[in-house]
Image 1 (tube, rainbow, N blue to C red):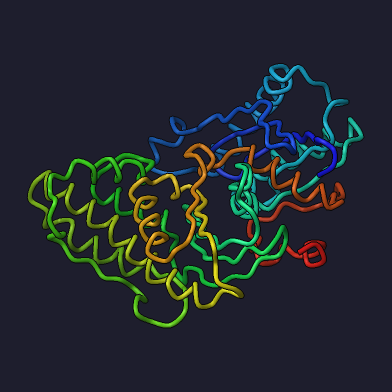
Image 2 (image 1 turned 30 degrees about the vertical axis):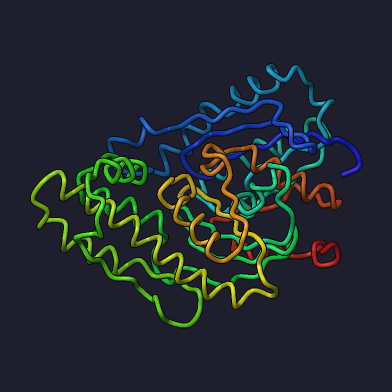
Length: 349
């Protein structure tokens, strides 16, 4: 990037309304993330219609706040970007149509960003994370191992054949009677365990020992559902939560071990991204895995793991630097596999 570009990013794919201004020198000029947690808490999960209406109510105000805080006008920015999928389609459309309207009104180029690609590239907002790298993408809706060769050049090595790991965390938390969102609550409960010995509870390790790098979490959830009613005390609950975390880590380690052999070249670094990457238990265990396999390990800052607009703006900067923009007739997509993100990067890699 020869010029220090500035892009306005918008993220509305789920239950966070987010806006950010990011420069190509990795400066986050200004950003806002408005959580809808209180709106969805009574329902124990995200209600798509409520999420979309909240985006409509707050997005314009957040854009104004970000622009005012940065003391910039639209003449000062180079492009406008928004998540165009995958995600809850009503929410995606709110952000996408807002970005298109701003592009049309200001004459600035528009980019529609794949939300998964934004997670995959988000570690590069920190200096020193160079291509290529092995990516473990873990969130409420995704669980994938991807070889990231360059912007737009991705090779899927493994993915979940049923449920996402974040969904497994949320479901087990709900079975334990923990509040939404379940993942952070389950981690908090696990840290209350006083046990320092081997886990007293035993959970299955689906697909472990099998070829390939795919995941499966449905059977693990079923095993948890059958075991949880037998827990007798608060310490039992905490110890079970700790066991669940280390079971997930053992699954990751087994699948990643196979992925190392499947990658086009010996990976020098492992990067974790997505909302579940904010879990410190998993970060520690993944660091241990990398230490044992002579690899660098990188996890983005906690705030960058969850949905935000800085990663949308950064992904747009990566693509804009290669000359990509999108037409205003770009459609919102509820599903958009990362491996479909191809094109210019094949030549750039």
